[in-house]
Length: 282
Image 1 (cartoon, rainbow, N blue to C red):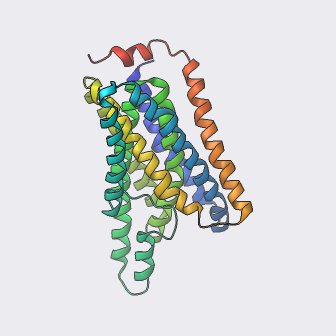
Image 2 (cartoon, rainbow, N blue to C red):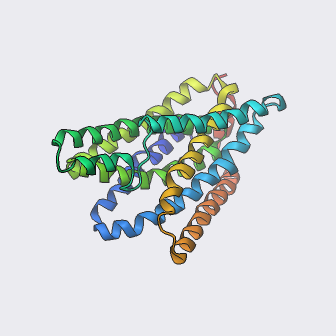
Image 3 (spheres, rainbow, N blue to C red):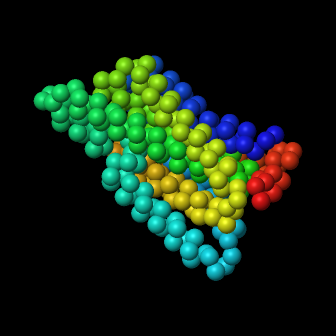
């Protein structure tokens, strides 16, 4: 099986299929959406942290010499700061609930401003999601070029966190005045940038093996940032013991699934793929 085909397939999994899965939530009642979404956020939190600390960071350090360890650690730190700045600038927008700035702005203007202000907020979400998905595609492609099993679990982690994010994006677009059909269309188009990023990574990163550990470090930064800065705060909004125990259980379920998949993928024999990942584009 060709490595490029795997990258296309799994970037599509992380992008387009996550949008289609999220679109199922449009069929649910508001009450059902409010009940189901927090479970997905909890599970995605565990999956993202497991991929970052169990997969990406160890693989990144395996690829560098001792003298580069501090530089690689610094890359992870700088990545966290970068994603904070990008989110502050509303370029990197992960919105999972109605309490974010975009929702608040729409609520503040909902009675006194024109419909155009709503459309602007929706357009910002589409642009930010497109950029985010493109970077996800590059990260998935970089992970596949390093190790096939790492690429698989990375794409699964992307899909896991994309679903609750896409549900939030649907809510914003619908509130901005988009029809359900247009909201779905724009989200699918934005998700296609994941595939574009993966293909570009395949053709441009193959000759740059030395910088792959730094892409993996940036990937770990993005996953840690999403989990800690975006997902976990939404989980703290409910503090009753029953909900908290469910959240903890689902976070550990996400961790266990990724750890299990990582071990399972290690045992899978994909004829010729791993050797292609190691020797192609030299």
